[in-house]
Image 1: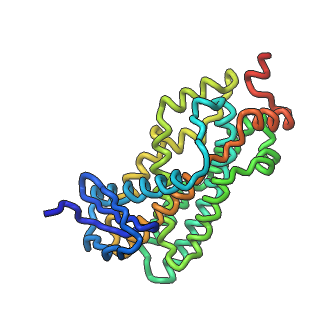
Image 2: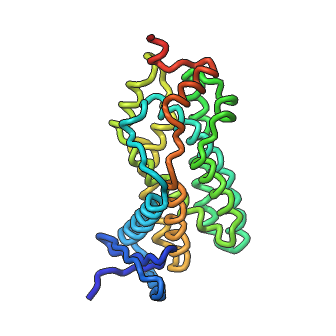
Length: 283
Protein backbone atom coordinates (compact mmCIF):
# COMPACT_ATOMS: atom_id res chain seq x y z
CA UNK A 1 0.00 0.00 0.00
CA UNK A 2 1.33 3.45 -0.96
CA UNK A 3 2.37 5.77 1.85
CA UNK A 4 1.62 8.84 -0.28
CA UNK A 5 -1.38 10.65 1.14
CA UNK A 6 -1.32 13.64 -1.23
CA UNK A 7 -1.33 13.67 -5.03
CA UNK A 8 -1.64 16.62 -7.36
CA UNK A 9 -1.44 17.25 -11.09
CA UNK A 10 0.91 20.01 -12.21
CA UNK A 11 1.38 21.81 -15.54
CA UNK A 12 3.44 20.09 -18.21
CA UNK A 13 2.11 16.60 -17.64
CA UNK A 14 3.60 16.26 -14.16
CA UNK A 15 2.01 14.39 -11.31
CA UNK A 16 3.19 14.96 -7.75
CA UNK A 17 2.78 12.62 -4.80
CA UNK A 18 3.71 13.48 -1.23
CA UNK A 19 3.82 11.74 2.12
CA UNK A 20 4.98 12.87 5.54
CA UNK A 21 8.55 11.92 4.64
CA UNK A 22 9.09 12.45 0.92
CA UNK A 23 7.70 13.41 -2.46
CA UNK A 24 7.99 11.95 -5.92
CA UNK A 25 7.21 13.24 -9.39
CA UNK A 26 5.93 11.40 -12.45
CA UNK A 27 5.96 12.68 -16.01
CA UNK A 28 2.95 11.36 -17.86
CA UNK A 29 3.04 10.67 -21.62
CA UNK A 30 1.17 13.28 -23.67
CA UNK A 31 -1.60 10.85 -24.59
CA UNK A 32 -2.34 9.86 -21.00
CA UNK A 33 -4.78 11.87 -18.95
CA UNK A 34 -3.53 12.67 -15.49
CA UNK A 35 -5.24 11.08 -12.51
CA UNK A 36 -7.56 13.19 -10.43
CA UNK A 37 -6.10 15.19 -7.57
CA UNK A 38 -6.32 13.34 -4.28
CA UNK A 39 -5.44 15.47 -1.29
CA UNK A 40 -6.47 14.40 2.18
CA UNK A 41 -9.41 16.23 3.68
CA UNK A 42 -7.26 17.25 6.64
CA UNK A 43 -3.67 18.16 5.83
CA UNK A 44 -0.66 17.89 8.10
CA UNK A 45 2.34 20.19 8.33
CA UNK A 46 4.68 17.31 7.44
CA UNK A 47 2.87 16.19 4.30
CA UNK A 48 2.25 19.81 3.30
CA UNK A 49 5.99 20.51 3.58
CA UNK A 50 6.67 17.65 1.16
CA UNK A 51 3.86 18.73 -1.17
CA UNK A 52 5.21 22.27 -1.35
CA UNK A 53 8.80 21.06 -1.72
CA UNK A 54 7.80 18.80 -4.59
CA UNK A 55 5.90 21.59 -6.33
CA UNK A 56 8.88 23.94 -5.97
CA UNK A 57 11.34 21.32 -7.19
CA UNK A 58 9.16 20.66 -10.23
CA UNK A 59 8.86 24.38 -10.98
CA UNK A 60 12.58 25.08 -10.74
CA UNK A 61 13.35 21.97 -12.80
CA UNK A 62 10.91 23.09 -15.50
CA UNK A 63 12.59 26.51 -15.60
CA UNK A 64 16.06 25.01 -15.94
CA UNK A 65 14.89 22.67 -18.71
CA UNK A 66 13.41 25.60 -20.64
CA UNK A 67 16.43 27.90 -20.22
CA UNK A 68 18.67 28.42 -23.23
CA UNK A 69 22.43 28.12 -22.86
CA UNK A 70 24.65 27.31 -19.88
CA UNK A 71 24.22 29.15 -16.62
CA UNK A 72 27.30 30.72 -15.06
CA UNK A 73 28.10 29.56 -11.56
CA UNK A 74 28.20 32.04 -8.67
CA UNK A 75 31.96 31.44 -8.49
CA UNK A 76 32.29 33.24 -11.83
CA UNK A 77 30.83 36.44 -10.38
CA UNK A 78 32.19 39.14 -8.13
CA UNK A 79 30.49 38.75 -4.74
CA UNK A 80 30.10 42.49 -4.15
CA UNK A 81 28.69 43.21 -7.61
CA UNK A 82 26.30 40.28 -7.46
CA UNK A 83 25.09 41.44 -4.05
CA UNK A 84 24.45 44.98 -5.26
CA UNK A 85 22.39 43.56 -8.11
CA UNK A 86 20.48 41.50 -5.55
CA UNK A 87 19.63 44.62 -3.56
CA UNK A 88 17.84 46.08 -6.57
CA UNK A 89 15.97 42.80 -7.02
CA UNK A 90 15.06 42.54 -3.35
CA UNK A 91 13.76 46.09 -3.28
CA UNK A 92 11.37 45.25 -6.13
CA UNK A 93 9.87 42.13 -4.56
CA UNK A 94 9.69 43.35 -0.96
CA UNK A 95 8.03 46.60 -1.99
CA UNK A 96 5.08 44.81 -3.58
CA UNK A 97 4.36 42.31 -0.80
CA UNK A 98 2.40 44.41 1.73
CA UNK A 99 0.05 45.91 -0.84
CA UNK A 100 -0.53 42.64 -2.69
CA UNK A 101 -1.24 40.78 0.54
CA UNK A 102 -3.67 43.45 1.75
CA UNK A 103 -5.47 43.43 -1.60
CA UNK A 104 -5.73 39.63 -1.48
CA UNK A 105 -7.03 39.91 2.09
CA UNK A 106 -9.75 42.35 1.01
CA UNK A 107 -10.93 40.00 -1.72
CA UNK A 108 -10.79 36.93 0.50
CA UNK A 109 -12.78 38.78 3.15
CA UNK A 110 -15.46 39.58 0.57
CA UNK A 111 -15.75 35.83 -0.08
CA UNK A 112 -16.14 35.04 3.59
CA UNK A 113 -12.68 33.45 3.90
CA UNK A 114 -11.99 35.39 7.06
CA UNK A 115 -9.21 33.24 8.51
CA UNK A 116 -7.20 33.37 5.28
CA UNK A 117 -7.80 37.11 4.99
CA UNK A 118 -6.51 37.61 8.54
CA UNK A 119 -3.43 35.52 7.75
CA UNK A 120 -2.69 37.61 4.65
CA UNK A 121 -3.01 40.81 6.69
CA UNK A 122 -0.61 39.31 9.24
CA UNK A 123 1.92 38.60 6.48
CA UNK A 124 1.49 42.15 5.15
CA UNK A 125 2.26 43.59 8.58
CA UNK A 126 5.32 41.37 9.01
CA UNK A 127 6.71 42.39 5.62
CA UNK A 128 5.96 46.11 5.82
CA UNK A 129 9.13 48.19 5.66
CA UNK A 130 11.40 45.50 4.28
CA UNK A 131 11.86 47.45 1.05
CA UNK A 132 13.15 50.26 3.25
CA UNK A 133 15.84 47.91 4.55
CA UNK A 134 17.06 47.29 1.01
CA UNK A 135 16.95 51.05 0.35
CA UNK A 136 19.03 51.76 3.46
CA UNK A 137 21.54 49.13 2.38
CA UNK A 138 21.92 50.81 -1.01
CA UNK A 139 22.41 54.19 0.63
CA UNK A 140 24.95 52.72 3.06
CA UNK A 141 27.00 51.68 0.03
CA UNK A 142 26.91 55.24 -1.26
CA UNK A 143 24.48 54.46 -4.05
CA UNK A 144 21.93 57.05 -5.21
CA UNK A 145 19.13 54.59 -4.49
CA UNK A 146 16.37 56.24 -6.54
CA UNK A 147 18.54 56.46 -9.65
CA UNK A 148 20.01 53.01 -9.10
CA UNK A 149 16.68 51.16 -8.96
CA UNK A 150 15.42 53.10 -11.95
CA UNK A 151 18.48 52.14 -13.99
CA UNK A 152 18.75 48.54 -12.78
CA UNK A 153 15.50 46.63 -13.21
CA UNK A 154 16.22 42.90 -12.76
CA UNK A 155 13.92 40.98 -15.08
CA UNK A 156 13.13 38.09 -12.73
CA UNK A 157 12.38 40.36 -9.78
CA UNK A 158 10.14 42.52 -11.97
CA UNK A 159 8.29 39.41 -13.16
CA UNK A 160 7.85 38.14 -9.61
CA UNK A 161 6.54 41.48 -8.38
CA UNK A 162 4.05 41.64 -11.24
CA UNK A 163 2.95 38.07 -10.57
CA UNK A 164 2.27 38.91 -6.93
CA UNK A 165 0.06 41.81 -7.97
CA UNK A 166 -1.77 39.65 -10.50
CA UNK A 167 -2.40 36.86 -7.99
CA UNK A 168 -4.02 39.31 -5.59
CA UNK A 169 -6.47 40.21 -8.38
CA UNK A 170 -6.89 36.66 -9.72
CA UNK A 171 -9.99 34.45 -9.45
CA UNK A 172 -8.22 32.60 -6.61
CA UNK A 173 -6.45 35.22 -4.49
CA UNK A 174 -5.52 32.55 -1.94
CA UNK A 175 -2.76 31.64 -4.43
CA UNK A 176 -0.68 34.49 -2.96
CA UNK A 177 0.20 32.05 -0.17
CA UNK A 178 1.94 29.78 -2.67
CA UNK A 179 3.96 32.70 -4.00
CA UNK A 180 4.88 33.87 -0.51
CA UNK A 181 5.95 30.38 0.57
CA UNK A 182 8.41 30.05 -2.32
CA UNK A 183 10.08 33.36 -1.51
CA UNK A 184 10.26 32.53 2.20
CA UNK A 185 11.58 29.03 1.60
CA UNK A 186 14.26 30.05 -0.89
CA UNK A 187 15.49 32.76 1.47
CA UNK A 188 16.64 29.99 3.81
CA UNK A 189 19.42 29.28 1.29
CA UNK A 190 21.02 32.47 2.63
CA UNK A 191 23.00 30.96 5.48
CA UNK A 192 25.28 32.62 8.02
CA UNK A 193 28.19 31.62 5.78
CA UNK A 194 26.66 33.37 2.78
CA UNK A 195 26.09 36.53 4.83
CA UNK A 196 29.68 36.43 6.09
CA UNK A 197 30.98 36.12 2.52
CA UNK A 198 28.94 39.15 1.44
CA UNK A 199 29.99 41.24 4.43
CA UNK A 200 33.65 40.40 3.78
CA UNK A 201 33.24 41.85 0.28
CA UNK A 202 31.76 45.15 1.49
CA UNK A 203 33.86 48.26 2.11
CA UNK A 204 35.39 48.28 5.58
CA UNK A 205 33.10 49.65 8.27
CA UNK A 206 29.96 49.57 6.10
CA UNK A 207 26.86 47.75 7.36
CA UNK A 208 24.67 47.04 4.36
CA UNK A 209 23.07 43.64 4.91
CA UNK A 210 19.88 44.62 6.75
CA UNK A 211 17.52 43.20 4.13
CA UNK A 212 19.66 40.13 3.49
CA UNK A 213 19.77 39.23 7.17
CA UNK A 214 16.00 39.50 7.63
CA UNK A 215 15.38 37.29 4.59
CA UNK A 216 17.77 34.51 5.53
CA UNK A 217 18.22 31.38 7.59
CA UNK A 218 19.33 33.56 10.51
CA UNK A 219 16.42 36.01 10.19
CA UNK A 220 12.68 35.98 10.60
CA UNK A 221 11.94 33.91 7.49
CA UNK A 222 12.90 30.65 9.19
CA UNK A 223 9.93 31.12 11.51
CA UNK A 224 7.71 32.29 8.65
CA UNK A 225 8.21 29.02 6.76
CA UNK A 226 7.03 26.87 9.66
CA UNK A 227 4.15 29.25 10.36
CA UNK A 228 3.09 29.16 6.72
CA UNK A 229 3.17 25.37 6.60
CA UNK A 230 1.00 25.07 9.68
CA UNK A 231 -1.52 27.49 8.24
CA UNK A 232 -1.61 25.97 4.75
CA UNK A 233 -2.03 22.50 6.27
CA UNK A 234 -5.12 23.73 8.12
CA UNK A 235 -6.90 24.60 4.87
CA UNK A 236 -9.15 22.32 2.87
CA UNK A 237 -7.89 20.18 0.00
CA UNK A 238 -9.13 22.58 -2.71
CA UNK A 239 -7.22 25.53 -1.27
CA UNK A 240 -4.08 23.49 -0.63
CA UNK A 241 -4.09 22.40 -4.27
CA UNK A 242 -4.31 26.02 -5.46
CA UNK A 243 -1.46 27.05 -3.19
CA UNK A 244 0.79 24.14 -4.18
CA UNK A 245 0.22 24.78 -7.90
CA UNK A 246 1.17 28.40 -7.39
CA UNK A 247 4.36 27.28 -5.65
CA UNK A 248 5.17 25.45 -8.90
CA UNK A 249 4.37 28.51 -11.02
CA UNK A 250 6.31 30.94 -8.82
CA UNK A 251 9.34 28.64 -8.74
CA UNK A 252 9.19 28.43 -12.53
CA UNK A 253 9.24 32.23 -12.77
CA UNK A 254 12.02 32.54 -10.20
CA UNK A 255 14.17 29.98 -11.97
CA UNK A 256 13.42 31.25 -15.44
CA UNK A 257 16.81 32.52 -16.48
CA UNK A 258 19.80 34.35 -15.07
CA UNK A 259 19.32 38.09 -15.41
CA UNK A 260 22.62 39.17 -13.86
CA UNK A 261 24.15 41.41 -16.55
CA UNK A 262 27.74 40.42 -15.77
CA UNK A 263 30.51 41.94 -13.70
CA UNK A 264 31.68 44.34 -16.42
CA UNK A 265 28.19 45.77 -16.92
CA UNK A 266 27.74 46.20 -13.18
CA UNK A 267 31.11 47.93 -12.84
CA UNK A 268 30.20 50.29 -15.66
CA UNK A 269 26.86 51.12 -14.04
CA UNK A 270 28.41 51.78 -10.63
CA UNK A 271 31.16 53.89 -12.17
CA UNK A 272 28.54 55.93 -14.02
CA UNK A 273 26.70 56.46 -10.73
CA UNK A 274 29.95 57.58 -9.10
CA UNK A 275 30.19 54.49 -6.89
CA UNK A 276 33.38 52.51 -7.50
CA UNK A 277 33.55 48.93 -6.32
CA UNK A 278 35.90 48.20 -3.39
CA UNK A 279 38.40 46.71 -5.83
CA UNK A 280 38.36 49.85 -7.96
CA UNK A 281 38.65 52.08 -4.90
CA UNK A 282 41.82 50.27 -3.87
CA UNK A 283 43.39 50.38 -7.33
